[in-house]
Image (cartoon, rainbow, N blue to C red):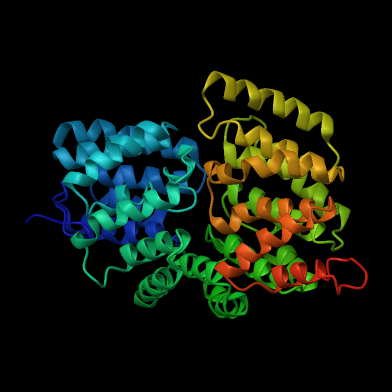
Length: 448
């Protein structure tokens, strides 16, 4: 009997139990749901020679930021797949090895070639997708469009009720501006499998892009208690809820959510999520004029600097720029900028000059040199996407530019920027900022 994966692709194992555990483990992994590592380990125990189970287990450890275990299992998969793997399985394992080994550009090229032959190989298909996928961290400015193009290219290969494909196809469409379409797809995928943190995350993003902040708060409030706090996306989805509260001006609620779920000591998420979520939310609070306890900044800075001492990852570097600027660490930021600049000059930082530029703009803003911040940040606006992440995550730099424009007296430019965002989606925050620029505004404050 030939065993198959959850999308009908054959598996090189004679064990019914191993195949069943593999299917379940991959679905848990692609749902960001607790239990994937244990289930995939059971697959390897049922058939120690099952290469794809070892490869998927390596991927599961990588997702949990456990690089030693990730490399160990993928190395075992490489040895095994050479003995009895099919062409697909060999390509599958090699791609995962490249991705886990940090060779993102080569992995991306191999993924795109692989999908031409085996588009339903969803563990591989997922690698370029999402806010932290191979496309997002490639340094491309148009990675939102690239994800849509990839999904649409292979959409005919998936049934209309494939929860995984609907989740990522919908997320990709919403991020790229087709918000109503993306929301409908993501919601359909979520309804098909509610025990799916990636599905809830995709819906949260679609609601953000639609300007449905109150709906996002209610959605997360209802869903999050059913997701184990050990889940890697628990803290990040709570961050979305805090962001929605802040959008409508409720800084107290945003801080409460932060301290319960997002704070480094409260979240079990990936270090990259914990660091960037804490820093960007605190930066927004402070930039909007709300009080932020100094201890929260100190804890966020300590976590960031301990976890990410070495420059070279654009998304991480720009958030370190924010936290070091906000906490007055100009000398430390200068040293990091020197290292980042050397990487840019050597051509080894794919996102390029936008990375040191955003760090310099953050420092200028924190030091209240608002005109200087505008001079740095305005020319970079079109390239911010190169650092990766999602629209919701990158909007912290848009907000910084808007506020720098307002505070440097560039009110016409600020109004034009706000008009464009409001045309795209409703926002009580943007509406308040725009109102503050009205000739009828009494005190010149931001009104927010």
